[in-house]
Amino acid sequence: MGLVPPSVEKTAQRYLIHMAFPSVSVIIPTYNRAHVLRRAINSVFTQEGSSFELIIVDDGSTDETAAMIDRLSKQHSEIKYLHQPNKGPAAARNLGIQNSRAKLISFLDSDDEWKSGKIDAQIRFFKKNPDCLICQTEEIWIRNGKRVNPMKKHQKFGGWIYEKCLSLCVISPSAVMMHRTIFDETGLFDESFPACEDYDLWLRISAKYQVGLIDEAFVIKYGGHEDQLSRTIDTLDRYRVYAMMKMLQSGILTQAHVELTFAELRRKCQIVLEGAKKRGNAERIKEFEKIIIESGIIKNTAGV
Image (cartoon, rainbow, N blue to C red; front, side, top):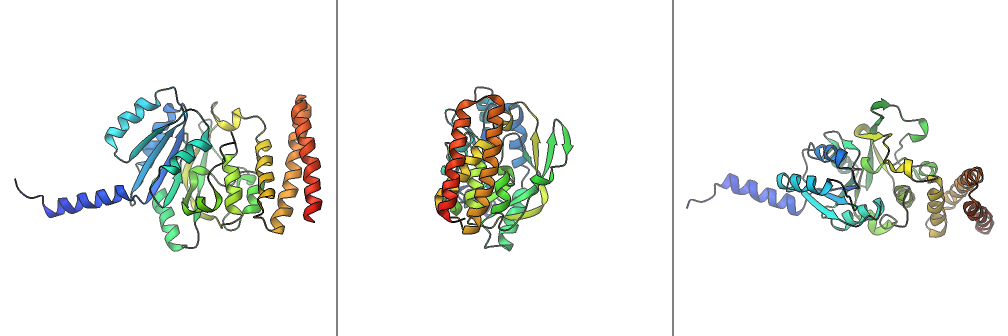
């Protein structure tokens, strides 16, 4: 039997090295979204220039997700399929992170997709900005099949953006790439949050790190569908309140950040409280009246 040609052998060696040490771990959490998941997966495989592994975390789907991924895995060795009982997106992303191998982590929501060049653009950004450990790109928004312009409150910013992150999420999971070392400092997604788990993480990150922004849209973000989480979770501001309370108790905030957090906390508490009164939700009224009183005590104690 003849020897393997050197060129073929070198190509095989490079492939094995890239798969053992991929440049990026791409994590897609999904739950009963086989009808759109294929689009997200295909968009990852349009990425060129850098090696990656694709970790798909099935959060207890009961549709055709497993069968579809089984077929795709036979075509793409980069796919790693993980399955867990339904625990929510925070637990799904955490499982992906814990099973990833690359130094860089990217997330992609199963109902979104990437434009070609997204991974390469962010890797180039990190090479040019070695002190920056997290960055995101701009997005294109599609609502009910039509392109729309995001409102001003959704505008993305770069730099020290903790203040910008308080009102609502201005960092999108699908647009982010980050060094995995950040998780060593800030911790993973909080699995006790059924929603706004990303808002909670971005507060922790933006309090300690600058966030880079690539001023080009590499993400197509779809909305308006019935299974969109923001349409199924009652009063998302309630979870933002919980996240801000965590930040105030963390001890990592500067005095300026404490003041900003208190101001937004009180505003959101009033919003949730007013909504609870309109709905006649006595339990939530009691809970948030207590939070408002306690946040005032903490505020005075902090000397703000």
